[in-house]
Length: 266
Ligand SMILES: Nc1ncnc2c1ncn2[C@@H]1O[C@H](COP(=O)(O)OP(=O)(O)OP(=O)(O)O)[C@@H](O)[C@H]1O
Figure (spheres, rainbow, N blue to C red):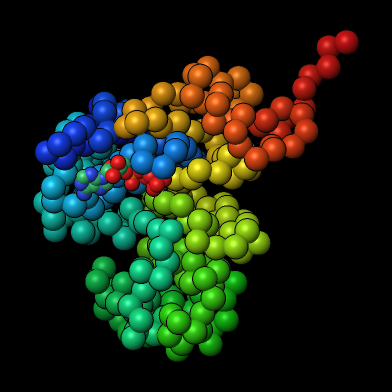
């Protein structure tokens, strides 16, 4: 198992935001976390890398390759974050410093993780740009000179730079138009295939679940109401809430919701 979240609860002074959540992500799989706005998906994903705001308290265990991330010091978790565990967010603009070039972002990320040779860093950055279909020339440009789709490609390149075992992608296409969003997910799927990293994919969009996920969990008001394989959940949802969400989704096309064809026994 790459990640096992075991009975995790997250609370503020006023309320419990996430309640007794357990889920496991296998090596190299695409695991979707689905649920309405405010159900606790982002908070749960932030808890994995100890990125919660200080007013929130976490209980339970988050085992990453067997090690409990919640027991690590700030320094230890910083070493893991970015290296073995990385994030991409919806707000790609907020992930970049406006007055630093794209190249400087790549460079700093690698320096922070102990890659000391400047030439090696530059070579790795160029390879990474190429791996996400971007021109070398972007290395010297500033974030505002790139489109949203290009910036999200850079985010993917940086997140995968040090070959993480798990990438957490939180609503990464929400701020993009649908064509750019589609291209980003195709790229992510291709890079996942090439690198073998597992993905925790937070989304509202059932079309993305259907196209990319292996397994998924459905969250409602801080709890997981249903989890399992994609085909089972899309075609035979058990929980009323899951049924409602799937029914309310934009049309998932002909055949079964998962995209499988109905078996004709006639
Ligand atoms: N620092 C905080 N202190 C107290 N409550 C918070 C804090 N951060 C988030 N919350 C609350 O936690 C709940 C879950 O938020 P979260 O962002 O995880 O939802 P989500 O399922 O990811 O929603 P969305 O799809 O809109 O991103 C919300 O009610 C939110 O207001």
